[in-house]
Length: 368
Image (cartoon, rainbow, N blue to C red; front, side, top):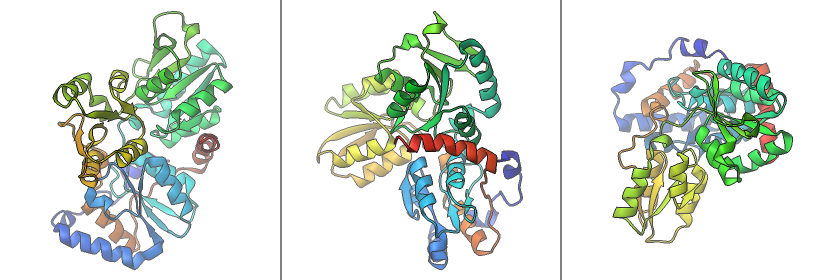
C-alpha cells in the first residue's frame, strides 16, 4: 500500500455541493442508491460511527468483525467501509480481488495505529534482537497498519483483539520467553497484569527516543510495551472514577481495556466493545452504569436502553475525531461515485504485504 499515493489521488476532497444538501435529501438519495445497487453494495459500520451513518450500515461491529463479515460477503462488488483506514486495509486483505474496498473519507485514520510505523518498528526490532537475541515474539493489536501486521506475521507473531488478547498473550508465551506488544501500551499492560505478570517485568519501548525504558535487570523483562495509546480512552481518569463513586455510589463502572491501568483497576468491569454492549444489554432494568469508551457508542447505548440509567464516565469526552470524519455527505458522495462508474478512495494492500499480514491474522483466528 502506498498511503501517500492514496491521499494525493484525484477527487479525495468532497465537492462543496454535498455540504449544502439537507439531511433529508441526503438520506433519500442514499436509500435510493442502496436499492439500485442491491447486493452489489455492502456497507459495514464501526460501533464508533455517527448515527447518521450507522442507520445505513448493513452490518455493525468492531473492526475485525466487520472485515470478516465483508470477507464472507462474496456478492458485493463494492464494500464502502465506514470506519478508519486500518480497518479498510484489513477488509481489503480478507476479501477477494474482484471486490473493491472504499473509504468515504481518506482522512479517517486512527491515532493509535499511527503511533507505530513500519520504519520505527524495524529499528526497534533490530535493537531488541541485539539485546534479547531470539527470545521475543511480536504481537500487534488489530488497530495497526497492514505493514505492522505484515511485520508481525513475518516474525512468527499474531494479531490480537481486545476480546482475545488474554488468549493470544498466553499463546505467545508458549512460543517465546518475551513479547513485544504493539501499538497500545494500555491494552498490553492490562492484559499482562491480568495474566499475573508484574509491572516490574514490563518495559516500555519509546519509538520517538528509539530506546527501551526500564530500570532494573533487563533479563527479567517479559513484556515490552510499545509507547502508544488510544487518544480517546487515555482521557478517562481516576478523577472521573472518583467523581462517579461520590455522586452516584450505586452506579457500576465499565471501561474498555485501552484505558490506563489505574482506571481499569478502579472500574467494576472492563472489556472489549462487544463485551460492554452485551453487558449493558443483559443488565437488569433500573440498573445504573457509567461507561468509559467512545462517546458516539455511549450515546447510542443510552438511546437503546432507556430502562437503565447510563452516563459517560467522562461527560466532557469528545467522540473519536478520526471516526467522525465519515459523515452523511461523504457516504453519499462515495455511493454516487460508484453509481457514476468512477469509485473513489479505494483502499488496496499490495500482495506481498497482504500475504504476510494474513499470517498474523490467521494465527489469531486459529485460536480465537
